[in-house]
Amino acid sequence: MATAHISDQSLLKARLEPLYESMIPTAVLTGVAIVVLAIVYWSETHSDFLLAWLTISFCLLLLRGALVMAYRRWKDSRKSPRFWANAAIGMTGLAGVNWGSGLMWMIGAGSEFQVSVAAAMSLGAISLTIVNLSYWPNHTAFQLPILLLGALGFASAGRPEYLILAIACLLFCVAQVIVARRLGGTLFRAMSLSAENRLMAQDLAARSEALEALNRALEIQSRSDPLTSLANRRAYDERLASEWARAERSDTALALLSIDVDFFKRYNDTYGHSAGDHCLQAVAAMLANGIRQEIDLAARPGGEEFALILPDTPLPRARLVAERVRKLVENVSSLSEFNLPRQVTVSIGLAVIHPAKGQTLDMLSWDADEALYRAKETGRNRVETAAERLPKQPKTAGA
Image (cartoon, rainbow, N blue to C red):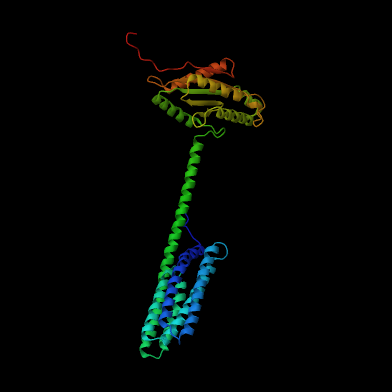
C-alpha cells in the first residue's frame, strides 16, 4: 500500500488554524496590557506620546480582528494558505514593532518602577505568543522587534546597570528564536504525522469498504446464474436445505415447483443459441415476477430447468402460484420488451411436504420431478401436482 501523503498547502493550512483562532484572545489580553502601561506612565508630559501609541496600538488590534474575520470567511475560496501566513506575519510584525517602540521610549522616560512594569508586561506579551508556535515565524515576528528595541532602549538609557539588561534582552532574543524554531519544527512534524495518519486511516477505511463491496459482489456472483441473474444450483441447494430445516422446526408446509421450458431444444436449434438465451432470460423474468420477493426463491439449477421454492406455502396457494407463473410465461411472447419470435410455454411439477420424522428432502425433489414428468407427458404448458405428503398422525387409543 502506498504511503499516505498530505500536500504542503494542506499542512500549512492546518498550522494556520490554531494561529488565527488564538489571535482574538491574545489581542484582548494585549489590549489590557497596553491600557495598564498607559495608566502607569500617564502624566501631562507623556500624554502626547501615550495617546499616539495607544491610538496606533488599538488600530493594530482592530486590524488584527479584521484579518481574523477575513480569514474565517475566505480561507477556502479567495487566497492560498501562503497568503494568509504572510498576512499573519506582517500583522504580528507591525504589532511587535509598535510594542517595541513603546518599550524603548518607556525605558528611557520611566522610573525604575515604571521600567520594571514595562519589562514585565513585554515579557508577558511575548509569552502569550507561545500559541503561535504552530507556525513559529509568526512567534518570532512579534518577539524579535520587542527584544531588539528593548535592548536598544536599555543600552541608550545612560544607566550602567541597564547594559546588563540590554545584553540579557539580546541573549533572550537569540534563545527565543532557537527554541521557537525547534519547538515549532517538532510541532510541525507532529502535525504532519497526525495529518498523514488521518489520511492513512481514511485510505484504509476506503480500501476496506471497497474490499467489502467486492466481496459482496463476488458472493452474489458465486450464487447467481450469470445468464438470468436467478439463484444458481449452489444457492438453490443451500436455500432448499435451510427452508426444509425451518419448515421442520415451525411445522409448516414447504412447496417446490420444478419447471421446464417446453420444446426448448427445438427452439434453440430453430432460432439459434442467442435467441435461446434471450428466451431463458424472459422465462426467468416472469418467474421472478410471479413470486413473493424476499420470501420465495426463483432458481435456475441448469439448462432450461428452473425451480421455485415457496416457504410456508400450503398446497392450494402453491397451485395458484404455479398457475400464475405458467400464464406469465405463456404471455411473455406478447410483450414488446422481450420480442420473442414465437410463444414460449413451461411445464410445472408441484410438490408440497410437511417435513417430519421419516421424510427427507429427496422426497420433495422426487415428487416435484415426477409431477413435472406427468405435465410434459400429458400435453405440456400445464401444472401437475404430486400427492401432498403430510406428517403421520399418531394413533389414538382404541383405534
